[in-house]
Image 1 (cartoon, rainbow, N blue to C red):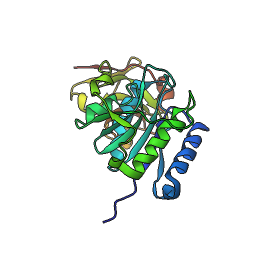
Image 2 (image 1 turned 180 degrees about the horizontal axis):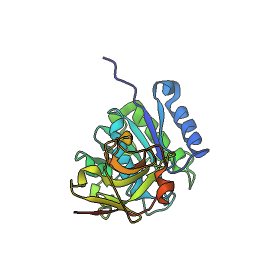
Image 3 (image 1 turned 60 degrees about the horizontal axis):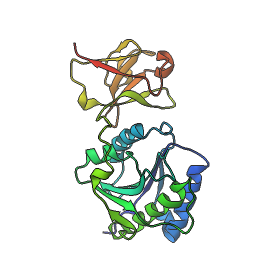
Image 4 (image 1 turned 30 degrees about the horizontal axis):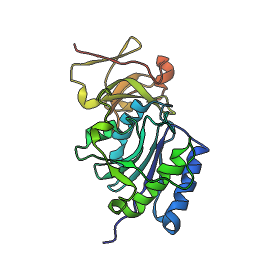
Length: 255
């Protein structure tokens, strides 16, 4: 059976025109094969410069994509500097290309088979401030085309060099707000016990299975589709009702 073409997924903290430029470079690098590799937009609005939030969101959403997928990940406040390495992580049967600055920490925790590589290849032209286009996109295209055969220009490195163990397994904050005003937290639902109370902005929120289980306009917290605790309001905007957004702290307390 012919193998399925590998999709390339964009995950970053910036939108247009930069994502458009990255897609242009990906199409160029894929060449005649470009139409066989779907370019999928996952996040263009990870909270700006927030590596920790990006790490949690990336690990939570990666399972939605088939094995062999290649993620181009750019939350990179240190771009062009010497304090972070450009690299690739292979984990859970998927490739993650981007800065080794902590963005892949939760991916490495989620999949015990994680391998880390430093990108030693350099393109003929590399801007100081746009490695997403000039470095990460060409490497991602090469992985989509060749997979495991794309080892040239990737140097295996000790994983401990790039780990950020100071990042918590669960982030007790709102780490993303969607266009409906739903507030996604960095708390894995599996970490919440049956008797725990969920508090934000001084309010204790009830739990529900889904939106229709509460009255219109009512706030609740539930397990979202990627396994994170999410604050929502049925037919309403949770962010506006609470006056809360990204960075709002969450308190979990027992009965």
